[in-house]
Image (cartoon, rainbow over the protein chains, first blue to last red):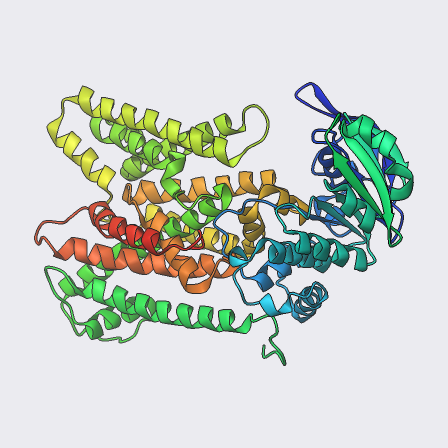
Amino acid sequence: MIRADGVGYSYGGRPALREATLETSPGRVLGLIGPNGSGKTTLLRLLHGGLAPASGTVTVDGADLAALAPRELARSVAVVVQEGEGPSGLSVAEMVLLGRSPHLGALQREGREDRRIAEESLRRVGALGLAARPFAGLSGGERQRVLIARALAQRTEHLLLDEPTNHLDVRFQHEVLGLVRGLGATVVVVLHDLNLAARYCDDVVLLDAGRVVARGTPAEVLVPERLEGVYRIGVRRVELDGQLHLLFSPRGG
Amino acid sequence: MTETTDALGLAAGRRRTLWWCAGLVLALAAAAVLGIGVGSVPIAPGEVLQVITRHAVGWPARLGWSPAVDAIVWEVRLPRVLLGACVGAGLAVCGVALQAMVRNVLAEPYVLGVNSGASCGAAAAILFGVGLGLGEHALQATAFLGALAASVLVYGVARSGGRLTSLKLLLSGVAVGYALNALTSFLVFASGNAEGSRSVMFWLLGSLSLAGWGTPLAAVVVVVLVVVAALTTLGRRLDALAIGDETADSLGISPDRLRAGLLLLVSLCVGVLVAASGSIGFVGLVVPHLARRCVGARHVRTVPVAALMGALLLVLADLVARTVLQPQELPIGILTALLGAPFLLVLVRRARSGAA
């Protein structure tokens, strides 16, 4: 369980997040939503130790995150981030095997068990067939699946994802989030698309200007009046086949 | 080692690495024997091997060749070939480490300004007799001190204001390099010593002619072996660092600490190498590309293969440098640049989506 208690952060004096408190529930998918600059990515970074909070504390299973060694943290929290890679020319299998790093000593090479776990992780995301391909040559959706497989290979209880649907077409957006949801892990995911959040998250936290303004199930949080205030856009909500959908229109339009 | 299944497709890469290593070791041995045999006094490969085994293990017991041949092989050419192999290996693996560290395929050992510092030290020693109190190895010692000072300066500037980032490291390395090159030029200009200026020029172009059994060679051998072993051991961390800081972080590797450690290792290695052989360019830039092409991007493979390739390349380059303009000796740096530049252009042409 990851718990943030009154965490705040500012970039060069400009506050990005104030007094945010949240807690993950085992096996549930928690979505962080909000407009650009609302502080959702900052909050995610605080949750995995990518940033140190200026105020408040983050605990992982009761232990203060700041006191955990990086390797220890990486055995408990896995993060999927998209980075513009450098000259790395790793194959997909090699990329996923890197996920075993937190479990290996400095002088230890990955063994049969590590390879088995990497293979299983790739199979779970349906990308075992890509194993021998160079990672750099994959499409956006394939990359995302492989990065999720690497996170799975870390065998952590928590999985954190920062906008995993970025640059993916509609089909892959649903494929990736469906996959994440089906893992049964404790997930925190930053999402831009509110309809995706409504469909794939168990709980959502809505941020606005660095503050948590609402939390609860998607049905509770994604209320047109509240969203109109936060996003400054017209919002209508419809139920279709038991699924919540949001429709947007420019204000006054 | 045989896996029942290889669903991950890893076995092919492992086999290829083994083949490359075996091939390169054989080629390096052959090039070394050839390199020792070729020169103003040609010596047959069999004789070369016998001289070496006689000195190393005392066999054959009877001296079947002239003392001059013995001295040429053991005192002159063997240390030179050994130095060449070590300098090549060291420059190549430092290039691999730096390219991973700053995530830029154009990075090479000399972008950190280390060679400029060493050259500056060497120029001060040659032109103004700085460091004469340091004994017979005054030139190497002042060059090493110059290299050390330059890397401390680069590190200090890059570190100022918090984190040590790739960009700050590159920029401060380039800036310090330019400043020190200017200082070297000024020393040459101010000395008014034509003979000395020629020596400095020779140093700047790189040469293995100072090789001999002694402290500098021992330092090079030890440092290069340690650095190759350390970088191979750090392979997985280098893989993660080469992808990105956030990725390294998420895998439990502190990118800042790793970069600082690597910088220390590379500066030490390049300092020792430049002190022993001057500036030999392009090896650290070209060989890492070549190694990645042959055995892939996993550093646990790239590092040893790059070391062998660098060693082979420099032993061969020195062989050519000694023979092509006989009795004159071509500075080896000219040769590596002449070979390296077109080679790099070919790589650039063939590079697909930055994978090279």
